[in-house]
Length: 357
Image (cartoon, rainbow, N blue to C red):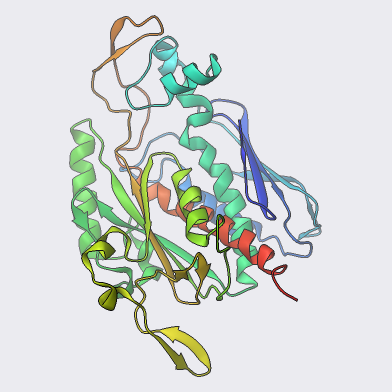
């Protein structure tokens, strides 16, 4: 099982949803980086459960502890180990799933691959694991600040309700609503829809838009490690993600090349593009414009309704939804998307140091 991601800035996460703790080891972070623990906790608080009525009511404070790699407030260049204790597990809520496979979960596939699975809250396949990624992503963000690179994400769609394009929004207002949509009118509609779905004991999917600002031209590799390919891999590794697109994405197929091409011009000695259908990436390498992408999340698989399934022996059974789950995952997915984008960019920033003399 591969539990690591990255090349030079590399992370390895560990732990299960109902184990004693989850955590991450960050390897390759340069020495001398000031470790802002208040910022790391802020990022974890954005992801933690129990934030509002439209998220799971599991109560986890997600207080982290740094075990190594930091001395007198700065990184030492050695591996940084961070742990987050699990405090509010209700393992008994999953006793009925020991021999049963939940529809659209990883239960059956884990059983088929390993033959031994932790059925409590999904074990390693639980989104609880993403708290470790957010902690690592916060460290990556601290590194990227040194290069003036900023990363934003917001909920741009819930069901059929869509927010305006990010260029029309004030991204500083993302945290002003519980659904993390910076457009107040759209946010109200999204919250109403999630409430409606929640009360009907069902779930709904949505979309998170990510934006990377001030990334310099030249990040990424031209063949297999294209910048957009690594962003896609990072986003598709997040629980419940079903799709990734960057720049014009699938909408770009409607355009002719004469409309889609981003023409260059010079502004104050800097090469720019008049449009940005490329999403800030051309030939797998950043061109200095905003990098923007969309991440699609499916409806949460656990619903508070009975469903048809089978047990380990193939016998037909009815599965009852129990436990505490998000009716829509996208509000809490925003910091996860940002974290994974930060990990990708931090890795390429360090790799970029080695690309030319």
